[in-house]
Image (cartoon, rainbow, N blue to C red):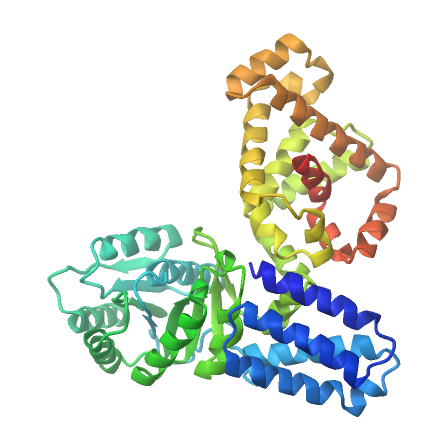
Length: 471
């Protein structure tokens, strides 16, 4: 996510930090690089101009010039202005949505076809029901797109939310009103309303969604936009903003956007806060938007807090504690433990999901690696271990040539892949031995010097696993 922008801005940040003294000349040079990076990321030109002006005013002000570390102070200014650009002065509600109304709180999703509205309704339903214990009902008013209603029924089931059925022959406004009546009678906390989109903005779509809005009076109207649209996302947001009283923005497919222009532009153009960002296809691929943490990611500082939250949500803590106790007792790290680590990492979304949350210096270590290929490699590793007998997993020294051939055949791979797995396992075993002998603090200090101390603690053996995968 945002790889190109993060890469360029983290280089600028590194240069800033190294400046012992700020002058008009070196500040101008840095701001020129920032300007080019933002334009290359497809950030809207008016937004870039305003941002650079704000940073320049503060960068050449007394607060920075009189600082003991002007370079560091300038990075702080840059960070604050990024937060202001993406969040403004508004504080986000605890749930990410303003649900302080007489139940059910109605949330209307608007946006073009293909923006990811239906998937986002499912993700939002899971987010509200699991994390905030809300009783959620979903309904589809999209009577035009084939299988739109069925798609929402399926994702609602995955999310654990109730679904209000509708037919392609029904009128969209009548569907919304019937769903609202049902939600009231069955004591739902939230009603999520999916609406029809078009491939482009047209009068019929805007008239219809305005009529639905007037009929059900939602407390939140979220504009759902595909982050990969770049400048087009901004133009679409402006059009929807004129037709509807939008209250916030839901950015989808953020993980597929290496530029990031929509993230920085849409708040400034619409004047509406980004409430959520969606990433990946999984039903739990949603985050309440936090401008501070997002700014840290953009500047290459990573988002260790998100990593820890993801671990807390996904990792089987009892299994992790058992393995920690085993290692503490001096027992040998075996292939069962290795498989557990692989499974824990996969439950957190795999390598591709984790990498963008790590600091830039740690991402650089994996530069050139295709994370999707690495994720497939991890799946094969799991398959190879599953082809072993319990005794072979507990005692890898048993694995001689004939056993390796049998395991390779069982996993559907070449013997070389079994050997590669065992080599990676040996590397992890060495790392675990060092941790048992008190080398953990030394390893953390080394990773801390790379800018990733907190991430190292959150990720445990990921560094060793990544090293093996790159080989």
